[in-house]
Image (cartoon, helix red, strand yellow):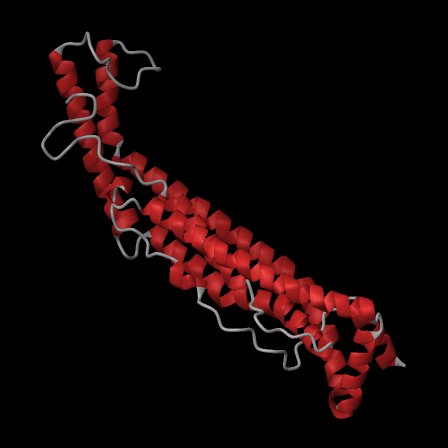
Amino acid sequence: MKMRVLLTACVAGLVCVQLGAATPAAAPDPWAKVPALPTACFAAQDHWSDTINAAIDSVQQDHYRQNDVNSAIQQRFTAAQEANPMAMAQAMQQQMMSDPQNAQKYMQRMTQQGQQSQTEIPARLAKEKQLDDEGKAVMQQYNAALAQAMGPANARWAALKKKRAYGPEVHWPGESGEPAWVYAEWGGILKDRDSAYLANCAQWWTASGSPIRAYLKRYKDYLVLERTPNYRKIIDDPKLENYRLLKVSTAGYRTTTDYEAAELYMKKASAMFGERRAQPRCTPTGGCEGLD
């Protein structure tokens, strides 16, 4: 009687564990399309935003195509259920009758799978929020470090503003009407800002162990080592087991969890490295923006 109750519960929607589900078809690893992080201080030096956007689009296209394949398999499974509403119950009963020694273990694992899903999903969401908050904190630390590095140049600009009686809305000298020494001083301020940015860049953007790069490594490790296996366990394995029970072909099926993970990583990296400045305000030959 107990086994019948558990069987009915599973048919009603309880997640079933994998008992040797069909192996998903091999496909290119989406992580192979993820470009290396840039090493330049200024975005205009490498145009990495174009590279990462193209990679995101390419992985998404693969993801969409795989979704179509998986959806077609799911539709065949649904059609088989509709053709015989008792097909799943009969297939599971036959499974247990053919292996009565392991039937009880099977039902126990089935029940544990449902219970684990209820606890693992909230834990995973909490972990992802923690990582998102950590990423925001890293960027706040970067901005604070940049502001500190810019301190002398900003103090120099504040002194010039005071000397020329500029209001708070003024962010640079006007294009005309100022004495030549004002433009010379402004050019010096811009050069100081470039130097400060470059000094800060070495610690945050280009160094192999920089806080930003270290954070992105931790984020990728979570996606690859925790999130992806967990999603496969609670999403793909039960589906494949159910397909197997109804003898629905899984040819072409592939998990999409690693597509999602690669996309999440690239979007995170794109947002963080998008904080780099586009280009220096002054050229190596000495000319500065608006003063050439």
